[in-house]
Amino acid sequence: MASPIKPSHALTYLRQICCSGLSREITIAEFLKALPMLIPSNSNIFTFYSEQLCPTYSITGFDVADLAPIIPSILNDFHSPQRQQRLLTWFSRYPAISHPRAVDESFYMTDLYNLIYRQFDMHHFLFTRIPLDKKSNGIVGLFRPRSQKPFENRDQAQLMRLVPYVAHAHRVGSDAAPEFSQDGMSGMMIMNTKGAILYQSSEAKRLLEQARHPRLLAEMRQQDRLLVKLTELCRNLQGIYRGHELPPPSFSHTGPNGQFLFHAYWLDSCGQQPDGLIGISIEHREPLALKILRAMHLSPLSPTQKEVALLLAQGLAPEQIRSHLHIKPTTLKDHIGKIYLKLDIHQREELLPKLLTFGHA
Image (cartoon, rainbow, N blue to C red; front, side, top):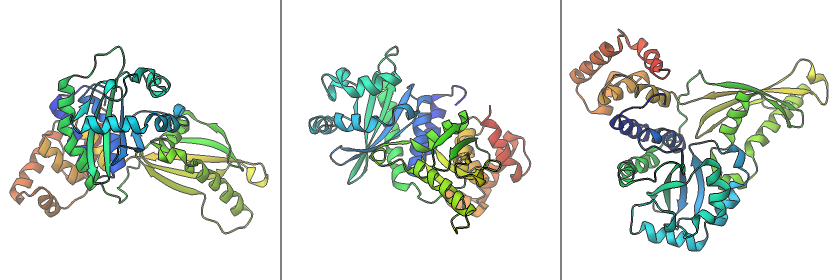
C-alpha cells in the first residue's frame, strides 16, 4: 500500500477483503498485509488453533523464510499445556491480550521471544481470538517494535470491529480456483538432473520462498513438498528425453500468496548429458478480484460504487449484479453512470484497465 489512507477507507477495504469470497488462506494472507493501514504494526500472524487452543498452523503477513526450519519446534515447545490453559482462561474472560504476562510471566525470557520475535523486532503484541467453528479457533496477532508505543485500547477496539468479518471470511471462503491475473512477477532458477538448486535469480528466490513458506507448524513438520515436486519435474524432463511417457514438466501451486507456475526445460544441449542443467521458470499470479480490490481502494469511487465496479470488472451480467446487490435496474444504471463519469471512461471494456492503473499510483 503506497500511501496513507483514511482509517474509514482502510476499514472498508479490510471488510471488502473478508467478503471477497476468495479462499480462506488467500483472504487471510491479504488481510494480514493490509491490516497495518488501519492499525500500525510491523508483523502480523493468523494462527489456526484446535478447540483447546493447540496450534495447528499459521499464516504470516511477512517473510519468515530464513527461520522457517526452526520455527515449528520452537512454537510447539512454547505451547505447553500450562500456557494453553492460561490462554483458555484469559480468553474466557477478555476479548484480547495485549500484555505478555497473560501468556507467561517470563515471556521475554522464552525461546519464542528471543529466537523468533526479536529477529523481527516483534516486542509489543495484541492478540484476539476469532471463533471459526465448533472445533477450531483463530488468533490474529499484531506486533510492534520495542521503539514504538504498546497497543492501546483504541487499537483493540479497531481490531474487534473486524473480528466478525474474519470469521465470515473463514465460513464462506471458496475452495474453487479463482481467476488469476496474467501479468505477475517471474524469475528463473537452474537445477541439475538430481533436483539440486544450483542458481536462483533474486526474483526466483523471493517467489520460491513465497510459495514454500506461507504456512508454518503442521505443514512445516512434513517434507518440503514443493521442492520434492521440483525434483520430480527434473526427473520427468529426463525421462521424456529417454522416451518414457510421462507428464509434461510443469505444474501449478496455489497457496495463501497466490498461484505459482513452474516450467522445466533443458539449457542449450544439456539434455544430451546425464548431469545436464535444467532451467526452471517461475511465474506468480494473483487472484484478479484481489488485484482489483487492492487498486480500487485508491480510486475516487464510493464504497457502493466500488462494489458495483468490482462485479462489472469480473464480468458479471447486469441481472447478476442486481441480484447480488439487491438493487433495481434503475439504481444499477445510475451507479454505472457515476462510475464511468468519475473514472472518465465510456464503456465496460475500459473499466478493468482503468481500475488497475490505481494499483500503480
